[in-house]
Amino acid sequence: MRIAYFSETMPPQTDGVTRTLARLADTLQSEGVEFRFFSAMVPDGTVRWRDRVHRVPSLPFLPYDYYRIGIPLFNTLDGPLDAFEPDLVHAVNPTPLGLYGIAYARRRGIPVVSSYHTNFVSYFPYYGLRGFEWVGWRYLAWFYNQCDMTFAPSRAAMSDLAVNGVERVALWTRGIDPVAFSPAYRSESLRAKLAPPRVPVLLFVGRLVREKNLAVLADACAMLEGRGEAFRLVLVGDGPMRAELAERLPGAYFAGFRHGAELAALYASADVFVFPSVTETFGNVMLEAFASRLPVVAAAHGGALDLVDPGINGLLAEPGSAFALACRVRELLVDPVRRARMAAGALATAVRHRWPEVNRQLLLGYDALVSRGPLTSAA
Image (cartoon, rainbow, N blue to C red; front, top):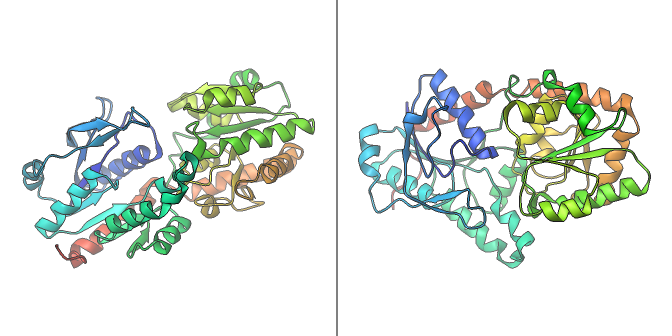
């Protein structure tokens, strides 16, 4: 089987989409599947499949200039695509580059799939665009319904797509690498730097942006401090909210972006992972926390509903409620025995999510479509 992927991002970007595609590429190589990426970015020399990436002209994405939007010109990619002879096209993003992949597949009469990674429409209210959500969903339904299948990472994401008019949806969940994230990375010297002995460390990992509901986290921490609860909040990541958060959370530790062993050590050296976001289609960071033996306190929304089993590996709080989040966090701050029990449950959850098994399910979906042929008809 030969698969052509159209994606805006590649390593060295470290967002959830990029990490997902990198793990998929590892599985494709191990399974002997031929693949090519057509992307706005090309990985550096440390990525062993770098020679399978064809760079596409691009422009910076203004809100986050470290991202780029691929601008394929006319039919200029048809030549390298025809030379590769794909059996199936996978359009990763609902962008001009993804549209090119869909159009190519329909011209050649081969199946085309897409995958739903980021709920951009849910970001609209955070930037004064609440009244335009219906426009966003209309566009996404139009984009995804041109595909033979759209793979979503959680049952909540599948439901969102279906409710908003996307017709063919299947589950492609996410995995975790037990070598990259593990309790073995715990560092006592780092732990001592983060907080005094017996003071629990709360950890957040992600972009410091409004759509992660970090204002709710800041309010919850203020409530906990008002009750005299001892803890240290550690935020890993960066973004436009950093200055505001630093003012509101003067006692927090801002680690900035961290990768590799440094990131793994921060996870493993913390006590509770807290995740207030209500805009996640999955939430890869929750799996990273589980693999690091951290219980998760998350908003009861999106991917957290698939991952967090209340009382077993973490707790769920009412979405958007700082009071509810503070209450759930406090339950674990004041009860180290319960916290330790949920930490063990977190690690057991991570064991059930391994990338090779997760990605083989996607390959089975590919196989079925290639055997059956495209479901959608050419325009």
